[in-house]
Image (cartoon, rainbow, N blue to C red; front, side, top):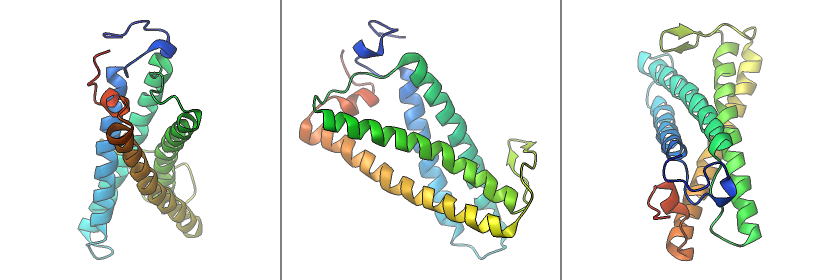
Length: 188
């Protein structure tokens, strides 16, 4: 609510709430870390300690992404988002679709990651806690879930790239406030 005129009305908001900005960049850092760790996994032979460590770290990061995205959505519901700066309805519609698709993938992908481990019969640890076993281990379903999780991850690579290019395009070509608002650099 800091420096926000009309705090309760997202239609008049000109800036993102600081918590929204924090969670946007926190999720970005977590996603980059998850991608780095899972790509690093391929450098180690199957069954090696380092490969298993990469999978475990990737799993913890995925759980953090899920929690951070849940918090981000709660903050979005509470504080809203600023009005779009681009007046073209097609751009506004595309931006909204992109954001909701990213939100969905960032919530669904960790769920499939958890299912992957559980169908593989492996315990899932999260800062000293162990998840209960929700499904019966099944190697065939594990392969299907793994394929879905990888598809979602690859889709995230593409969507995040498009999202970043769109933000840079709006900043450098359209010259609007979209990127500056997410960097909390707006004087409104």
